[in-house]
Image 1 (cartoon, rainbow, N blue to C red):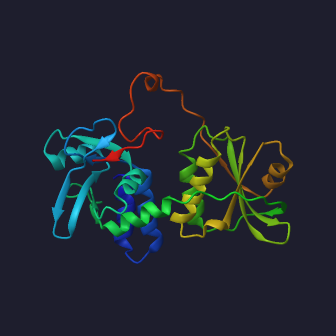
Image 2 (image 1 turned 90 degrees about the vertical axis):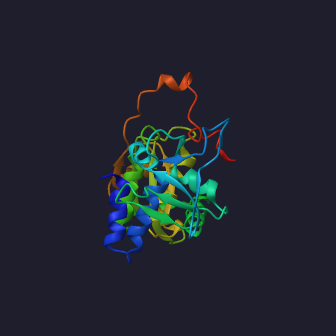
Image 3 (image 1 turned 30 degrees about the horizontal axis):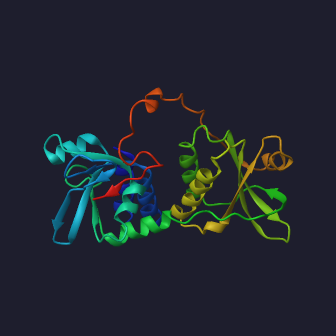
Length: 262
């Protein structure tokens, strides 16, 4: 069973549970999906294979290459893209998304409106603000957010050494929560802030419920938080892949060169 299978099973078991549905969308956005194409990609231009169904046109994705092969009956052109990229490409196109159709328990047909919502939920950039923390207490956020954050940060290896989550009282008396990344790699701040924002979205919480800060491990604020905070240790960075220097990345996998639809 894949992560997407498990998330879909949770939705099927509890169709009225909004949290389970949000978790499914999160898995879909975070996972790498195999998008079926009409022909091989050329110069970052993708031509997805469109199927006309009674409910309208759809393109098909699979969370495993063997599932795509089972559906297509053999070798077929495809592109491997994060679900968030596919949602962004299809936004406003009036095209639905078929997920693992006919080959897995997680098969699902998402209407265009669902893809538009997903793309829009992932679009906003975190806002910067100047805040002064006066004191810290133990965090009191829902377990779903904490588990979602733990899963997100497990995929952020090498971007920071750790993160501390605590309740906070700001100057002026405002209460909230703060997640402080320790010793973040220069330039990684936007990606880490976005990861927190997306965790909030897919946990059903308001974006402003958790402020994000970047501190050195020796900062007095970090030391004050450590006494009451929940700590997340980020994985060690992976060894560099020397192939990236000589082998072009597949379409859609280079953030500096996003794919386009034909």
